[in-house]
Amino acid sequence: GQSLEQPSEVTAVEGAIVQINCTYQTSGFYGLSWYQQHDGGAPTFLSYNALDGLEETGRFSSFLSRSDSYGYLLLQELQMKDSASYFCAVIGGFKTIFGAGTRLFVKA
Amino acid sequence: EAGVTQFPSHSVIEKGQTVTLRCDPISGHDNLYWYRRVMGKEIKFLLHFVKESKQDESGMPNNRFLAERTGGTYSTLKVQPAELEDSGVYFCASSRAGASTDTQYFGPGTRLTVL
Image (cartoon, chains in turn purple, green):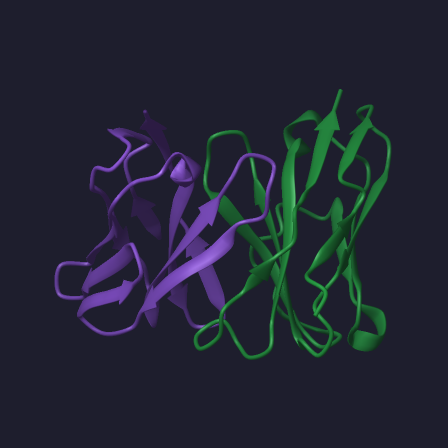
């Protein structure tokens, strides 16, 4: 079967750093994406890793280890507006498989 | 550039009724995807259109669901007859190229409640 595992919930304080892990088991793999979704809104693309290593985009970074079927999203200098759900997604051929999402709560 | 739009934003229907959801992708995007998220669970793939053709419909739950994309522009997803377990948020996404190489842009979703 195909599955992605990520924590259901993470809480952190404003200004801190938080890491959201994702492990996957899929039949096909092109890359790992991360999406952010605020309540009632559309999932929006954050990052994509096709190769091993760290990709940095501003306060957000994403890491992939294909040999470990593992990746993470790192959020630095947390802001209240970062409170949202974060989904990892495996791009496998023409199909994208999403995890159940991690709800991030940022406290003042 | 306008984003992906979906209509309606909310729909509340009774079990056994029919509902049709509409998605207008970003202009010029040949790839259109339907997804569904049931409360607290993953965003589950339903199907993928390339222009007007169904590339992959392996995620469609059963034959009560019918998706069309006549003319390769907007798409509709019809649920007939609706059942309680069909409740959830239905997202549409579009991309210029295939999923393996291109970012998908999501619409705001249609929240379907079946009573």
